Image (cartoon, rainbow, N blue to C red; front, side, top):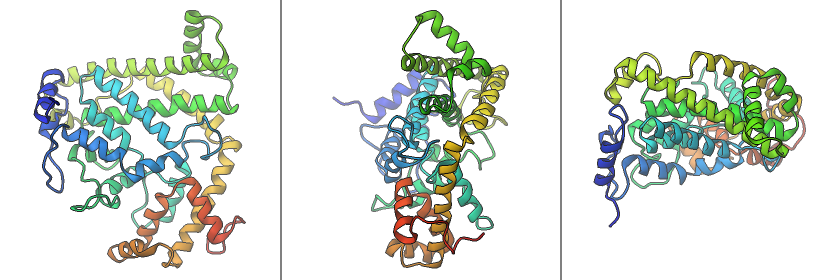
Length: 378
C-alpha cells in the first residue's frame, strides 16, 4: 500500500526537529483545495513548481555566460537544480523539512529575467516609479498570478510557507529555517559553480586562484594530498566539491549552535528571531567575501562576459519601449492583463518571462539586429 499523506506527516513528526516546519501545520493556500492523497502539501508544491512553464524556461536563461555560449556552462536551470541539491543536504543534516526547502530552492529563480542580473537591473530601471523589478518578487508574482494552469485559480496556489520563502527581501522577519537554508544554499552554489564555469571558459586559472584565494588554496592542497596528481577536469571538480563541502559543514555547525543558543522550539519561534539563524561562521563569511570580490573583478566584469550581456540588455530595453508603444504584439492575453493593471507592468511581465534566445529572436524579428532602436532613450 502507498504511504498516505497522514503517514508521511507522522514520519515528519518522528524524524524532524521540533523547530522544523511540519507540512501538517501549513497555514494553507489562498484558494482552498482538497489535500493530496499520497503526498504532503509541500511535495505537491514541489511538483507544481517543476511542472510550471516558468521552470522549463530557466533552461534558456543566462546564469553568468550568455545562454548558448558553451555546452557545459551553467544555465539558470542547472544552477537552480544545484541549489536544490545543496538545500536538501543542509536541511537533512539539520533535521528540517527537506521537501519545503527543496521547493523554495526550485522556485527561487522562476522570476529571473533573461540575460542574468544585468537584465534584472535594466528592467528595474525601466520600472522606476512604477514598482520596480526584482526577481524574487517576480517569482512570487509568477506562482501567485501569472502561471495559468488550473481552472479554479490563477497561479500555482502554493502553500503559505513556500510563498514566504520567496519573499526574502520584503518580509520583516527571517522566515522559516527552511527558507533561510534555501537562501544561503543559493550563495554556496553560485560562487562555487561560477568558479567552475570561469575555469571551463578559460577566463580564470588555477594558478591565479591558488595565489589569490585562500579557500581555493586550502581545497587544492587537500585534493592533492588525498588523491595525488589528477587530470585537469577531475582535479577541478574535486576542488569545487571540497569548497562546497566545507561551506555546508560550516553552515550546519554554525546554525546548530545559533539555533541552540536562541532557544527555539517551534517554527514560529524561528520566525520571531530578528536575524537569520542559518549563517556562515564569521571567518567563513570573511573568506567568502574575498572570493566574491575576486569573482566580480575577474569574471563578472570580464569583457568576454560583460560585453555580450550589455549588448543583449540593450535589446531588452529596445523591446520594452517597442511593446510600451504598440499594444497589438502581446496578443489577447497580454491585452486582457493590460486592462487589469498598468500596461508598463504587463510589458515587464512579458519581457521578464522571455528566455535569452526568444528575446534575441523577437528583437531580430521586430527591430532587426542593428544598434538600439530609435524608441530607446539615449
